[in-house]
Length: 467
Image 1 (tube, rainbow, N blue to C red):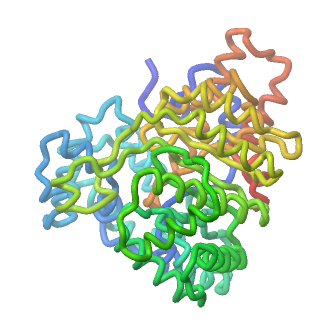
Image 2 (cartoon, rainbow, N blue to C red):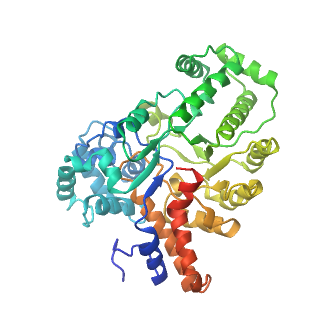
C-alpha cells in the first residue's frame, strides 16, 4: 500500500517515477493564465493568516463548504478568518476524492512543510504554524512565487486597466515576469445597454478617443491594445458560453452600435452579430502583433439569482454549460484563416463532452508555420482535476500531438496554487510511464520521452509564447 502524498504520489510505475523525478520535478513554472492581483505582487503583500490566504476568494472551497452544510457567515460572511478556517478544516475530510483534498495537502506540504492531514483535530496547530510563517518576510507574495520557482505569470486585465502595477514591477527589476493579458469581455457585454455605455465612456477617457461610432470604438480598443503590448502583453483571453460567428455587414454593426449608445436594448440576433464582429476585430489585432489568443468557453454563470444578488459574481454559482459550438467555432476560425489572419490560439472547453470534438477541431487549422499553432488547452475549472486532466491528455494524444502541448496553468487567484503544476506533471509522467510499462511505448525511447515531459512541463510554453 502506498503512503498518501509521499514523494511518488500519483506515480504508479518505476518509469513514471524516473520521468517525474529526473525530468519534471525541478523545472521552473510558467503560469501563462492566472487571476492574481498585480497590485498584491507589486506591493509584495503579506497575508495576515492562513484563513485569509486560503479563503479570501476561493470559490472552489466556498462551494464545498456550502455543500457540507456550512452557513454563509463562515464562507463569505462576517465571521473572522480564523472561524472560516475552522469551518474549512471541518469540511476537508469530507472532500476526499475531490481535488480539493489533494490541493489542500499539497499546498500545506510544499508551501509550509506540513505533512499532517487537515481536520478538526489538527486545525489549531496547522493554523498557528502557517500563520506564524505567513507573518514573516519569507512568505510575502513575491517570496511565495520565488518559493515555487515561478518564472512568468500572466494576469488577466481589462482593456481600461492602467497596468500601473505591471509597469512598477518591471521598473523595480522584479526578476519574475509579471505580464498583462488582454481580456476584453466587458467590451462585448452588450446585454445591458446602461452598463455597456458606462464602459464605453471609461474606455473613451483612458484611450483619449471620442467614441461616437463603431469605428471609434475599435480605434479606442486598438490604442489600448497597443498600450498593453508596450507593457509586455503577449496573450489575449476571452471567457464566454459559446463561440460567435454570425454573418454581419458593416452597416448592421454601425446601426447596432448606435442603438446601444442610445440606450435601447438589443434583440438576441443583434447581440450575436455584435459579438461576432468584436471577436473578429480582436482576433485581427492579436494576429497583427503575433499574440496568442485564448478562448475559455462553455460556462454558464451566476445561476443562483438570490445569492448572485447578495454576493455578486465569482462566488461559486457557475457550472458547466452544454452549447453546441462546433459549427460556429469552425466558422469563426475559418473566417480568420481565409483572410490569412489566424494567430496562435488556445481553446479550453469546460464540458468534457467536447474533448474529442475540440481535439479534432484544432487539427483543422494547423498550417505548418508553428509547431502546435492551434492548441487544445489544459483541463479548465471543473476539469482541472485528475480525471479531467487525464481525459484531456488522452484525447489530445489520440487525435493530435501531445509532444507539442504547452501544458498547465493555475487559472487561480491564489499565491499558493502552484502545486497544480506539480499535480499536472505527476499525472503526465504517470500516463507516459504506464504506457512504457505496458509495452505501449518503447522503453528504448526513454530519452525522447524524458524530453517530451520537459517540453510539455516547461519548454514548449517558453518557446510558444516567446517568454
